[in-house]
Image (cartoon, rainbow, N blue to C red; front, side, top):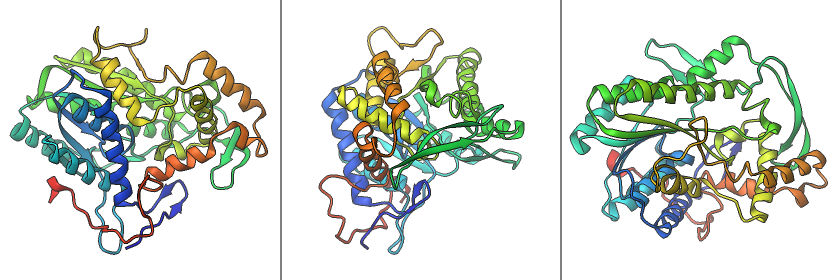
Length: 393
């Protein structure tokens, strides 16, 4: 079939297999060109099919030469319907990895479930023995716990409502958005979904099963951002969950022998999650313009390659700030970058958007999440949408 993007709200309901493959290939090429990393050799990536999780898997495989086991939650396609983008990304990655002689297998299912944890443990025992790195990169809107309770996360403030500028990504219109405060129940649920409870469950289960090497590293991802976004992010319901994530890293390190846990604070990028947060797309568009002009812009793969090469496995060991956080947002939060962004923010309008913000770059990165606008792809051609993942076939 001929695959075109179909946008609904903050997601695209179609994905292009050849486009996804081309984008995965370009990320692999970037890591290979950056050079070898003396790092992890057997890596589990929980949430491996898109964004930072996918980039982590590519950086581990093609930077460190690692065997990678990925956990995803994606839908296959058929002759009449496309698969999810994560499915095509994983199919492409496995195809490239196997052709290059790298171990790569994938388990598809709900990473919050005990069933998937058990499947992962069994496969590690069978194929790898033990893993020396675990990347936790889940970005789910809801979680079903072992007792059957379903928790849903919310994108809200805490204590009081917040009004600030936002943008309609389709039309480019700058307006104002008001975000209402979350209830205590909503905050609790958001922490249940996006906090560190499941991360600790994973590490505890892996340790109890004897499938983690002594001296292993585990890393989860977070965001802090500038004051502009603090009410909706750092100080909002998501921020409460990320605070819990950071506290969990310390708990894992303290309570689980032989494992060091870290939270990496990453740069603001276009993801399915960030696209749904009011105010954030406008901030990202201004940030993109500013950092590109300053020669500082990084995408997911640049961030993850740098994390592996410099922040975790570089000379001198893991590099953190005074709070024990890995700071991959160091370029975004540079004083000169933020001063410029904040000056633009004060005066940005629909009329000045083109001059001061990179909305086209934002839109293109959003399209690329689903395999569209990739270089060298004929989007008018028929394409096979029923592609399988090698290790799942």
